[in-house]
Amino acid sequence: MENRKRKRSRHTLLWIIFIEILLVLAGLAIVIFVLDDGVETPVDQLINETMKIDYLEETEKTGETEEEFYVPRPFIDEQLLTVNPYSRPGEKIKSLDYIVIHYLGNPKTTAQENHDYFESLKDLKNVSMSANYVIGIEGEIIHCVPDDEVAYASNSANSYSISIENCHKDESGRLTDKTYTALVDLTAYLSERYGLERDQIIRHYDVTGKECPKYYVDHPDKWEAFLDDVMLIRNYWKEEAEKEKRAKEEEEARRRHEEETGIDELTAFLESNAPASEE
Ligand SMILES: [Zn+2]
Image 1 (cartoon, rainbow, N blue to C red):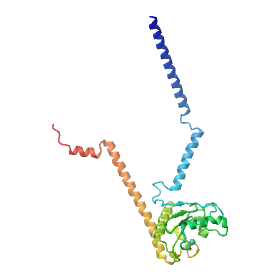
Image 2 (cartoon, rainbow, N blue to C red):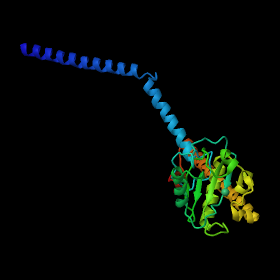
Image 3 (cartoon, rainbow, N blue to C red):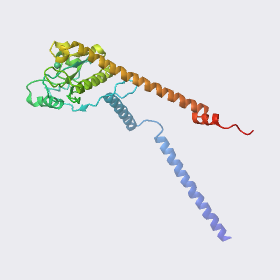
Image 4 (cartoon, rainbow, N blue to C red):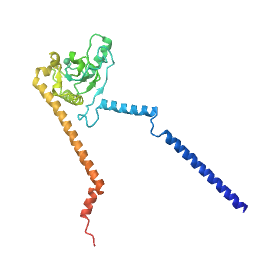
């Protein structure tokens, strides 16, 4: 009898502990719920804003919003110059209306040498010169000045254009095949990305009458052929992107159809080929 009573009281004690634990857990749940009830704390807001900004900057930088940009970004060696008054003044351009094509007029120099020369002007202080991009004889592309900043290449057009300098092997200024291909790819990418049309891709010559890029001033037909190639490449990537988009849509439609009907094509095929039942 005594024993049973003790047993019962132990039982009651266990129940009380159990209920207390439950109460504590419920209390915790309520506290967590109240703290996290969807009301944004300043910290939450900051995190959200930062994520938004990061995403936008990333999109700006790479242009990888699939729908908007078709032309892939060629490999670009980012070697932005130090901000200085002689080659990278750090000024924003007023608008982006043109891509201006140049030739260096200094045969056999490499893109790296020209980049380094632009960089050295901050110490030499004897001349102002640069370009947003330099393309080398092997087709390497060096980014010297950000697209939205003034570079010293195209005289009066500096404040509303992007400049591309090209290396060449001899005095004729004719580009190697690799330089040419890189120039077409880069111009296609930039012109598509910034919404520039064929007539917004110009020669330095068209700004000042200077014999630059010499080969394309001497051979206007080759210049037209270059512009044709740029538009051709742009069109090619646009069609590829549209093909890919159509394929995705078809795949999505097929998947939805499968979900709705609950059978996939394999099952349907097996069923249609199954031997007739005995019934
Ligand atoms: Zn030029």
